[in-house]
Length: 198
Ligand SMILES: [Zn+2]
Image 1: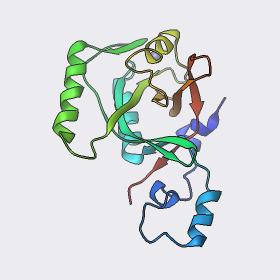
Image 2 (image 1 turned 135 degrees about the vertical axis):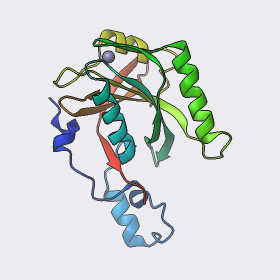
Image 3 (image 1 turned 120 degrees about the vertical axis):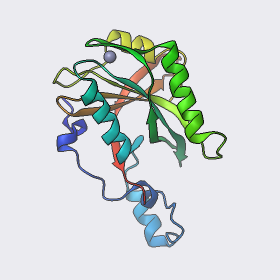
Image 4 (image 1 turned 60 degrees about the horizontal axis):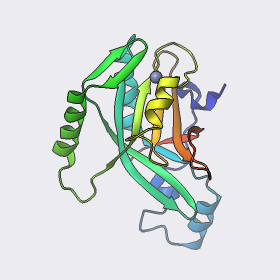
């Protein structure tokens, strides 16, 4: 059991993302750079508001499963790739206690929400993954159907993020798509961190 991904016991990082990566213009002195290199780089960063709202949506859907799209950016810091999740959207889905999948209408819905929110803006976030819930009151795991869905087009791009939530036990687990040297794809659970905007 991986309790660090249970929100109840989750520790906040010492610094937010902008501080870690020196996005702030003041942080150009050597001392700060030293601190940056000592800082652990997580593979997934999720904005606090996104964590809160997606968890709330999954709680409201309980006892049904919920599904939604994660929006954000993929970055690289030295040789480490990481993903920043900044927003989420959803649309109509077929939902039951054991199933959640977008309807064709649902896909059109969330696509137009993204258009309305971001249009042609230069910094428009991209779809970087999916969140999905298993409201069973335990440590959740992806089902065979989930693996089949998320490891196929259009979801299976390397480093895409899949968040698996159990709204009853407050688990909030993050996985990324990894591709091995033989081209085999898998979902690997990774540490993630919540951040707040500056
Ligand atoms: Zn599932």
